[in-house]
Image (tube, rainbow, N blue to C red; front, side, top):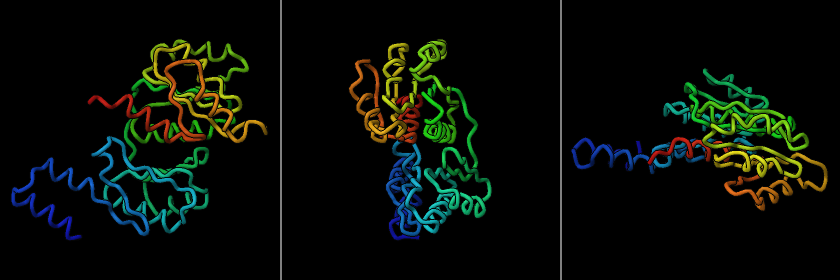
Length: 247
């Protein structure tokens, strides 16, 4: 036990620190996990847990991080995990699941999902991995969300047929590559805020998603917030805060 942690607990035991103050103090303390320092108090501070970005991390780093999270009774959500690392993590920990489309691993008890009004639209099937990452993260946070697939603007009737779902949504996540036009169309069909996610899908001039990103950022439709290219996690976390933050 570190001296800082011991001091915090001692002052609480002696009545010199309230329960609220103790929680706040503990929430600021990073927890070592190999080379990483985990922010286990992030959910207390922000309402959302720390999510581990798995790409470029070694298997040893991922195992150490997962072990620290599970020992602290936290759900481990790890994104951008290679199939090889995912297999090793799932072999090492019980109650684990790997989604090979999203390339995400969860370790721990998943919450029951509930409908909070989040709709997820995916322009084309090539955008599905990013949509799936968004869904996995939202489901791990307890939010029901199933992608509405293949409703891109090449056949505008496809998205127009989803106006009933858009009418009751509290927030709409729209994932699209190529020219990235779908969020602009959706924002003109719903009163809900739209979170636009550009993907790195498209031929040469699309520049790995930069054209879609620029299109979404320069949209003439009001009410759109745009996250980074292929950033399904960012979209999921923003949507989660929008539908759960009642402060």
